Amino acid sequence: MSSNDTWSVHYRPTPRAREGFLRIASQIADHFGRVVAERVADDLVHAFELLERNPGAGHRRDDLTHNCQVLFWHVGPTLIAYRLASDGVHVLFVERAEVDWERMLAESYDP
View 1 (spheres, rainbow, N blue to C red):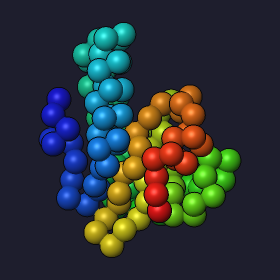
View 2: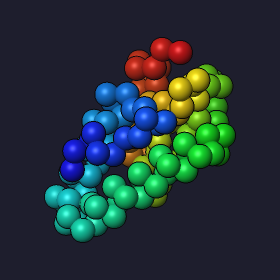
View 3: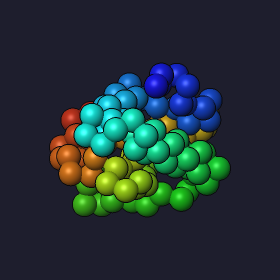
């Protein structure tokens, strides 16, 4: 699956978000097969489309970041971190929920 086929002009991924999306799809394919990986990838794409149509649908996570611009949406055990911008939704991260989000956000996201 090409990451270029997944992203719309209204939701823009950071390189880290693209990497996370592809890594999760690959790990699921390795463990559960291609059919399951495609279903998970489709679920994530549907979430991106939902956030594009309803950018305020996400919620804050003060336990992870005090940056009020960063919102979260979950798809099963995967979290999507994003922020609103004048040109659409910027997808910051697509990662499994069990990663150290607080550290990752502190190290990688510069508002």
